[in-house]
Length: 120
View 1 (cartoon, helix red, strand yellow):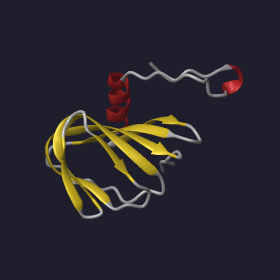
View 2 (cartoon, rainbow, N blue to C red):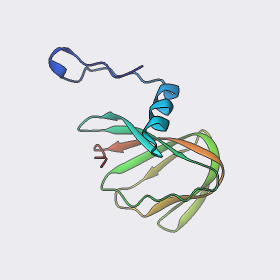
View 3 (cartoon, helix red, strand yellow):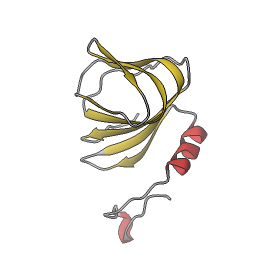
View 4 (cartoon, helix red, strand yellow):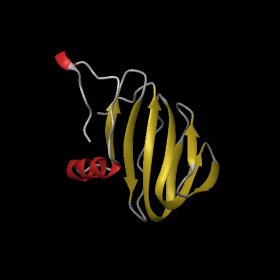
């Protein structure tokens, strides 16, 4: 389900998104990351890394939370490494050097940034 907007184009107080639809939009964009919520205080996106992929991201100016939907791999944050599996929630502080690696099964991650992450 796409975002709902009130009259005049202002953002409605409710947005509902089906992850399957967000994945279709992400694939159509050709990008690994697809942002589907963008508010001043928060943004959310779907980030997918294929098995064996290299995570190209660099530190962000925002705090972020990852929720692992599916897949398996590892993440290193400021030198601390751990496995990631479905159901894990990972917080990464703003400006922390971090990267997913050793991706065994395609990782599908919900990503939440606060404040919003500006894509581009």
